[in-house]
Structure formats: C-alpha cells, structure tokens
Length: 329
Ligand SMILES: [Zn+2]
Image 1 (cartoon, rainbow, N blue to C red):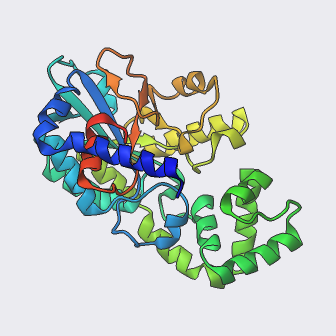
Image 2 (cartoon, rainbow, N blue to C red):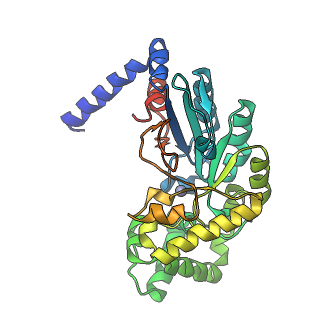
Image 3 (spheres, protein in one colour):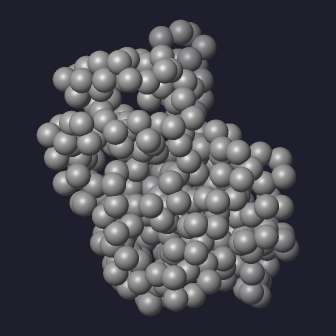
C-alpha cells in the first residue's frame, strides 16, 4: 500500500466522522428543496448466487436496505416514484427521495418491496423485460456463470475456439470487446444446445433470480412504478441506432402490456449512452434515468434524472449515512 493511498484512506475515514449522529439533522437539512434518487440492484443475503458477484453491480443485503429506508424515513424524506416527480408540488423546506432498482431481480419484488410497503415507501423498478417469464438466461448472467467455474470455462473456451471466428477473451470484459452482442447471444444459444448438462444449475438459478409477470403486476397494483431498463440489458455503445431503438420499443411494449398502463421512464443499462440518445428516448419515454451521483433540484426539468448508486457495503455505519445524506462517499 503506497503512502499516498494510506493518507487518502485516512482523510476519507476522517470525513466519515462528520456524519456522527449529532450532525445528522444538519446534513439532512442540506437536502431541503432537493430530490435524492438512490439506485440499488440485487437484494440478497451476501454470498447468495455468488456467480453473480464476479460481475455486475453490488448486492445489498435485506438488513442493510431496511436500515437505509428506515434512516431516510426517520430523517423526514418524502418518497416519490420517478413519474411522480413530474407532478409533485415541491416545497422548499421539504426533502425528497426516490428509491429505484435497476435490472429487476426477483429479490426486489419479494424482499425489497414488502419492506418498502411496510414503511409506506413507493419505489421504481427499472425492469429488463427479457428477464420475465422465466426466459433463457440473460447473456450477461450466462457469461458470469461460465466464467465462475474453471471446468465450465474450459469447455466453453474449447467450443468457442473451434466454432467462433473471434478470439476468446480471458474475462467477461475482454470477451465483450471481441464480439458483437447479438452475435454473442447467438453463440451462447448454440453452446447451450450442445451442452445442456452444464446449464442445468444455471436454469435453476435464473428461475430464482428472475421475477414473474405476476410479481410485476402485483408491484404495479401496489402503486410502485415499473420503468424500462431495456429488453436484453445490452450496452448502448455496442448497438447500432436501429438496434438501440428496437430495445427501447420492445421493452416498452412488453412492460406496458404486462402492467396494463403505459411505461413512461427508462434507465440506460450500464449507464451507457451516446449523444443524441436523449432525443431518441424522448420519442418513447417521458423520463430517462442516469447514474451521475448528483441530486435533483426541485425546479429542474424532470425529464433527465441523475441517480446515486449504492456503492456496496460501507466500511462503517458513518460512511453509509454519508452516502445517504450527500449521495457520494
Ligand atoms: Zn443494469
């Protein structure tokens, strides 16, 4: 560990001390007139479905999520869904929060939502529509699964080298640099057909990880908002303009059909977007959500919503408060 790194760590730890309980009211009041939009992903006990931990975004445990929600409520944040931001009459001396989840894992519906309901908090779930109806594993989760086990990976690499024109990558990220996403999806389908035996446990895991249409409908009925997170969770910079638009349309159509009400908000998978995308999204959605760590001022146009993403388990309770009260650590 370098000297500079050690010093930075100490400075960061010292900053946490500003968030001891006696100062909570001060920090909470600094949020007056603002909307903090929080982003979480999977809600599972740590270690559950561990193959997912090698990639993707940090998981939050049910206890940690409950502590966050209770903390915000105790500190008098008023909770809104993303689409409620468009019609809310904001008051300068009040503070507001939106709780959002990207991807839409089953654990959000069966663990996070009951907790939020108990506290009277409406949430927004940005759902990947391809994860519904127990369809085949999403390409991304499929890759995490293959890369998480040495024997599986070896079989996959041998098959890839014999059948795919592109070089094999030593990690999920490297592999993605070598091949287009749609071509990759086809390759994974062919590999699964040839080796169903090594995918049995993956199919079981996805049944547990992915939500049902009924869960989505129940959430909507309970006044939570369902937004779109695309259909396949493709990275925008790996799609053509036509393919991107297709993702926007397909997910909107499916989710709207399932919940019986037009889906009006969209969050970019991997927070990737290109210049001009905002205008394309605006043809289909009223609001888009990004991950920029900023708060939203109550006089802002509520069409583009920056969010603060859960950074993973905090080193200490003070740092968790710091994130909740300032949006960054
Ligand atoms: Zn995502």
